[in-house]
Image (cartoon, rainbow, N blue to C red):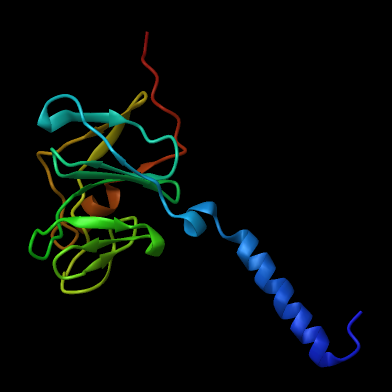
Length: 165
């Protein structure tokens, strides 16, 4: 039992910090694992295994980043929209960063800081059973098509579509 107001406030502050630390997801504490993947199929219908857990999946051959984070799945162009240098995942900071001018992006591709003037470019995505289908023929820029950019995501918790008999 605290004997003074100062002790009570100190213990309360510690308790709040413990509660806040417990409330953090493992994703924000440990970062997202990074995997190299290869898609299959034609460029207009590139297929990848649907990510079953939060992760960053990179297809270097097709310049695609697939991210599952915070309940959503996205597909991004691997290059920064500023001058098209590659972006990399910075695990300790839980974000993407341009390798040339250090523009920074959240896991959902939203621009945080740096020389870039827009969010990372997204590709349209859809789910087909256990597959994520990415249309690489259409790149969506957030400044030119904000609603299309916002819609280029899939809820990770949504059940996979089933085939009709």
